[in-house]
Length: 233
Image 1 (cartoon, rainbow, N blue to C red):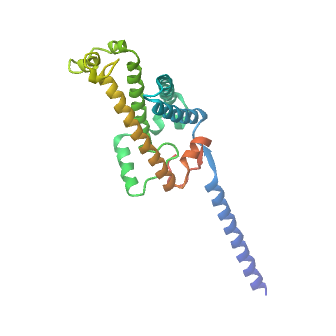
Image 2 (cartoon, rainbow, N blue to C red):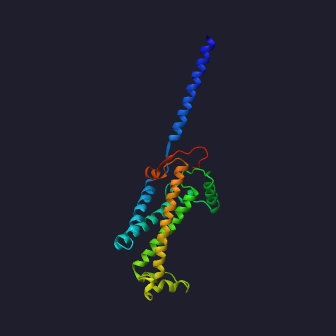
Image 3 (spheres, rainbow, N blue to C red):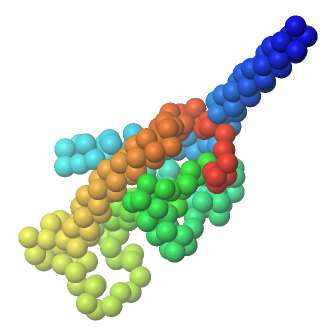
């Protein structure tokens, strides 16, 4: 009888220990950590709204389009500064990787074995750089188009480039104002931005699915699942 009772007590203890271990694992899995600071989140969604307004108002509502463009330029300037002095996961030094690391990560993605990053992963970091460059170029060329004389403020350019910027006033096919080359560049950059945004959204959806984590919601709450073994924090 004593042996039977001891066996039952041992099994009960093991069962309770297992239950506690499963509960602890569940708690650790559900634990959240703050990743994105409030300014990063406000910047992100403000940029989404400003870009949408700028895109939808193009060729229709010039004043609204210009205001949205200035908002985009201001947001990009803020992000460049915040990328240097902001919180840990907002800083470029934390998430920017070299070409080799980025290509390696993309290769791992194609094979479905990429590691989870608490902040931006290398592919996401490369996309951020591409978006900031394209947004800056779009805003700058848009600013040039507002006043024809602004093209003259550009630094001296090679002869093969300068005539292209100045051709708008002499050739009706090149448009008005800052020159046909500037207008065409502005439109190309805007279309490129649309493509980059689509790729960015696709990447967010893919990463959310792969790592069982809603990244769009994380950019609202600022919180992500705590790092687990194998994750890069």
